[in-house]
Length: 232
Image (tube, rainbow, N blue to C red; front, top):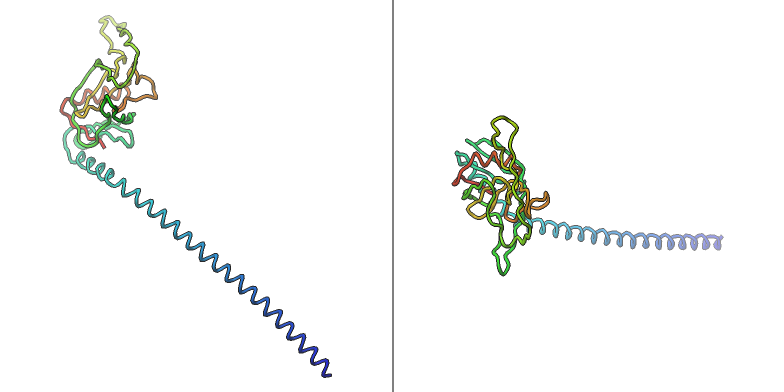
Protein backbone atom coordinates (compact mmCIF):
# COMPACT_ATOMS: atom_id res chain seq x y z
CA UNK A 1 0.00 0.00 0.00
CA UNK A 2 2.79 2.35 0.87
CA UNK A 3 4.56 1.62 -2.41
CA UNK A 4 1.41 2.30 -4.34
CA UNK A 5 0.94 5.65 -2.61
CA UNK A 6 4.54 6.63 -3.29
CA UNK A 7 4.12 5.70 -6.94
CA UNK A 8 0.98 7.81 -7.24
CA UNK A 9 2.68 10.75 -5.54
CA UNK A 10 5.63 10.42 -7.90
CA UNK A 11 3.39 10.39 -10.93
CA UNK A 12 1.57 13.45 -9.62
CA UNK A 13 4.81 15.34 -9.10
CA UNK A 14 6.01 14.37 -12.59
CA UNK A 15 2.73 15.57 -14.13
CA UNK A 16 2.91 18.82 -12.22
CA UNK A 17 6.47 19.33 -13.42
CA UNK A 18 5.39 18.72 -17.02
CA UNK A 19 2.50 21.12 -16.71
CA UNK A 20 4.79 23.71 -15.17
CA UNK A 21 7.21 23.36 -18.10
CA UNK A 22 4.43 23.72 -20.66
CA UNK A 23 3.05 26.77 -18.84
CA UNK A 24 6.51 28.37 -18.78
CA UNK A 25 6.95 27.81 -22.55
CA UNK A 26 3.58 29.41 -23.21
CA UNK A 27 4.51 32.40 -21.09
CA UNK A 28 7.79 32.80 -23.02
CA UNK A 29 5.93 32.60 -26.36
CA UNK A 30 3.35 35.10 -25.17
CA UNK A 31 6.08 37.47 -23.99
CA UNK A 32 7.82 37.22 -27.37
CA UNK A 33 4.56 37.90 -29.20
CA UNK A 34 3.89 40.90 -26.97
CA UNK A 35 7.40 42.22 -27.68
CA UNK A 36 6.91 41.77 -31.44
CA UNK A 37 3.53 43.51 -31.27
CA UNK A 38 5.04 46.46 -29.40
CA UNK A 39 7.83 46.70 -31.96
CA UNK A 40 5.37 46.64 -34.87
CA UNK A 41 3.27 49.33 -33.23
CA UNK A 42 6.37 51.45 -32.63
CA UNK A 43 7.44 50.99 -36.26
CA UNK A 44 3.96 51.88 -37.53
CA UNK A 45 3.87 55.01 -35.38
CA UNK A 46 7.29 56.02 -36.67
CA UNK A 47 6.21 55.48 -40.28
CA UNK A 48 2.97 57.43 -39.82
CA UNK A 49 4.91 60.25 -38.20
CA UNK A 50 7.37 60.34 -41.11
CA UNK A 51 4.51 60.38 -43.64
CA UNK A 52 2.73 63.14 -41.71
CA UNK A 53 5.91 65.25 -41.55
CA UNK A 54 6.46 64.78 -45.30
CA UNK A 55 2.85 65.86 -45.96
CA UNK A 56 3.22 68.92 -43.75
CA UNK A 57 6.45 69.87 -45.51
CA UNK A 58 4.78 69.53 -48.91
CA UNK A 59 1.83 71.66 -47.83
CA UNK A 60 4.19 74.20 -46.30
CA UNK A 61 6.12 74.47 -49.58
CA UNK A 62 2.94 74.86 -51.67
CA UNK A 63 1.28 77.31 -49.29
CA UNK A 64 2.84 80.49 -50.77
CA UNK A 65 1.89 79.46 -54.32
CA UNK A 66 -1.66 78.64 -53.26
CA UNK A 67 -1.91 81.94 -51.37
CA UNK A 68 -0.72 83.79 -54.46
CA UNK A 69 -3.25 81.94 -56.60
CA UNK A 70 -6.13 82.72 -54.25
CA UNK A 71 -5.03 86.35 -53.93
CA UNK A 72 -4.95 86.84 -57.72
CA UNK A 73 -8.33 85.13 -58.08
CA UNK A 74 -9.78 87.44 -55.42
CA UNK A 75 -8.44 90.50 -57.26
CA UNK A 76 -10.02 89.28 -60.49
CA UNK A 77 -13.35 88.63 -58.77
CA UNK A 78 -13.34 92.15 -57.34
CA UNK A 79 -12.62 93.85 -60.67
CA UNK A 80 -15.98 94.82 -62.25
CA UNK A 81 -14.88 95.61 -65.80
CA UNK A 82 -14.06 93.36 -68.73
CA UNK A 83 -10.90 91.34 -68.22
CA UNK A 84 -9.26 88.02 -68.97
CA UNK A 85 -8.44 85.27 -66.49
CA UNK A 86 -5.76 82.73 -67.31
CA UNK A 87 -5.85 79.63 -65.11
CA UNK A 88 -2.50 77.93 -65.72
CA UNK A 89 -3.19 75.00 -63.39
CA UNK A 90 -6.36 73.94 -65.21
CA UNK A 91 -5.17 75.26 -68.61
CA UNK A 92 -8.22 77.44 -69.16
CA UNK A 93 -8.64 81.04 -70.33
CA UNK A 94 -11.80 83.02 -69.54
CA UNK A 95 -13.23 86.25 -70.87
CA UNK A 96 -15.15 87.92 -68.03
CA UNK A 97 -17.72 90.70 -68.38
CA UNK A 98 -19.52 92.25 -65.37
CA UNK A 99 -18.47 89.36 -63.19
CA UNK A 100 -19.77 86.70 -65.60
CA UNK A 101 -17.65 84.32 -67.64
CA UNK A 102 -18.83 84.93 -71.20
CA UNK A 103 -16.30 82.63 -72.85
CA UNK A 104 -14.26 79.76 -71.46
CA UNK A 105 -11.68 78.06 -73.67
CA UNK A 106 -9.01 75.39 -73.19
CA UNK A 107 -5.39 76.38 -73.74
CA UNK A 108 -1.98 74.76 -73.98
CA UNK A 109 0.65 76.25 -71.67
CA UNK A 110 4.33 76.21 -72.61
CA UNK A 111 6.93 75.24 -70.07
CA UNK A 112 9.44 77.76 -68.78
CA UNK A 113 12.82 78.02 -70.51
CA UNK A 114 15.74 78.57 -68.10
CA UNK A 115 18.32 81.25 -68.73
CA UNK A 116 21.66 80.44 -70.37
CA UNK A 117 24.83 82.38 -71.19
CA UNK A 118 23.21 84.20 -74.11
CA UNK A 119 19.48 84.53 -73.43
CA UNK A 120 17.42 85.33 -70.38
CA UNK A 121 14.80 83.02 -68.91
CA UNK A 122 11.36 82.81 -70.49
CA UNK A 123 8.28 82.17 -68.37
CA UNK A 124 4.73 83.32 -67.69
CA UNK A 125 4.58 85.65 -64.70
CA UNK A 126 1.61 85.10 -62.40
CA UNK A 127 -0.44 87.93 -60.99
CA UNK A 128 -1.93 90.99 -62.66
CA UNK A 129 -0.71 91.48 -66.24
CA UNK A 130 -1.62 93.98 -68.95
CA UNK A 131 -2.08 93.40 -72.69
CA UNK A 132 0.79 95.29 -74.26
CA UNK A 133 0.35 94.43 -77.95
CA UNK A 134 -2.33 93.07 -80.29
CA UNK A 135 -0.92 91.57 -83.49
CA UNK A 136 -3.19 90.34 -86.26
CA UNK A 137 -0.90 88.32 -88.51
CA UNK A 138 1.81 87.08 -86.17
CA UNK A 139 4.56 88.65 -88.28
CA UNK A 140 7.38 89.38 -85.91
CA UNK A 141 10.84 87.97 -85.52
CA UNK A 142 11.46 84.50 -84.19
CA UNK A 143 13.39 84.58 -80.86
CA UNK A 144 17.02 83.59 -81.24
CA UNK A 145 16.75 80.97 -78.51
CA UNK A 146 14.15 79.03 -80.53
CA UNK A 147 16.90 77.66 -82.78
CA UNK A 148 14.53 77.05 -85.71
CA UNK A 149 16.16 76.90 -89.17
CA UNK A 150 13.06 76.63 -91.35
CA UNK A 151 11.70 79.23 -93.77
CA UNK A 152 8.38 80.98 -93.90
CA UNK A 153 6.20 79.58 -96.71
CA UNK A 154 4.54 81.90 -99.18
CA UNK A 155 1.12 82.93 -97.86
CA UNK A 156 -1.79 81.70 -99.94
CA UNK A 157 -4.54 84.12 -100.78
CA UNK A 158 -8.02 82.67 -101.03
CA UNK A 159 -11.17 84.29 -102.32
CA UNK A 160 -14.77 83.32 -101.87
CA UNK A 161 -16.88 82.21 -104.84
CA UNK A 162 -19.46 84.88 -104.25
CA UNK A 163 -19.95 87.63 -106.81
CA UNK A 164 -18.38 90.21 -104.52
CA UNK A 165 -15.27 88.07 -104.32
CA UNK A 166 -14.60 89.34 -100.85
CA UNK A 167 -11.37 88.24 -99.28
CA UNK A 168 -11.56 85.40 -96.81
CA UNK A 169 -9.79 85.72 -93.44
CA UNK A 170 -6.06 85.16 -93.66
CA UNK A 171 -5.03 81.54 -93.31
CA UNK A 172 -3.42 80.49 -90.06
CA UNK A 173 0.09 80.68 -91.47
CA UNK A 174 1.76 83.12 -89.09
CA UNK A 175 4.61 82.24 -86.80
CA UNK A 176 2.17 82.74 -83.91
CA UNK A 177 -0.99 82.13 -85.85
CA UNK A 178 -3.39 84.73 -87.18
CA UNK A 179 -4.02 86.44 -83.83
CA UNK A 180 -1.51 87.23 -81.06
CA UNK A 181 -1.62 89.00 -77.71
CA UNK A 182 1.62 90.01 -76.00
CA UNK A 183 1.51 90.74 -72.27
CA UNK A 184 3.63 93.30 -70.45
CA UNK A 185 5.97 90.57 -69.13
CA UNK A 186 6.66 89.24 -72.65
CA UNK A 187 4.34 86.24 -72.40
CA UNK A 188 2.64 85.45 -75.72
CA UNK A 189 -0.96 84.32 -76.16
CA UNK A 190 -1.35 83.08 -79.74
CA UNK A 191 -3.61 81.08 -82.02
CA UNK A 192 -2.43 77.80 -83.51
CA UNK A 193 0.28 78.59 -86.09
CA UNK A 194 0.48 76.96 -89.50
CA UNK A 195 4.27 76.92 -89.71
CA UNK A 196 7.32 77.39 -87.50
CA UNK A 197 8.71 75.54 -84.49
CA UNK A 198 5.38 75.49 -82.64
CA UNK A 199 3.10 74.44 -85.47
CA UNK A 200 2.83 70.82 -84.36
CA UNK A 201 0.13 69.80 -81.90
CA UNK A 202 2.69 68.69 -79.30
CA UNK A 203 4.81 71.85 -79.20
CA UNK A 204 3.98 75.07 -77.36
CA UNK A 205 6.16 78.15 -77.17
CA UNK A 206 8.01 78.44 -73.84
CA UNK A 207 6.43 81.32 -71.98
CA UNK A 208 3.45 81.07 -74.31
CA UNK A 209 -0.22 80.08 -74.28
CA UNK A 210 -1.77 78.51 -77.38
CA UNK A 211 -5.47 78.60 -78.33
CA UNK A 212 -7.29 77.45 -81.44
CA UNK A 213 -8.12 80.16 -83.95
CA UNK A 214 -11.84 80.47 -83.09
CA UNK A 215 -11.28 80.91 -79.36
CA UNK A 216 -8.40 83.31 -79.90
CA UNK A 217 -10.34 85.40 -82.41
CA UNK A 218 -13.25 85.79 -79.97
CA UNK A 219 -10.99 86.98 -77.14
CA UNK A 220 -8.86 89.09 -79.49
CA UNK A 221 -11.88 91.04 -80.73
CA UNK A 222 -13.16 91.68 -77.20
CA UNK A 223 -9.99 93.14 -75.65
CA UNK A 224 -7.64 96.01 -76.36
CA UNK A 225 -4.20 97.15 -75.26
CA UNK A 226 -4.34 97.90 -71.56
CA UNK A 227 -6.92 95.22 -70.78
CA UNK A 228 -6.15 93.38 -67.57
CA UNK A 229 -5.16 89.72 -67.60
CA UNK A 230 -5.17 87.90 -64.26
CA UNK A 231 -2.78 84.97 -64.38
CA UNK A 232 -2.92 82.37 -61.61
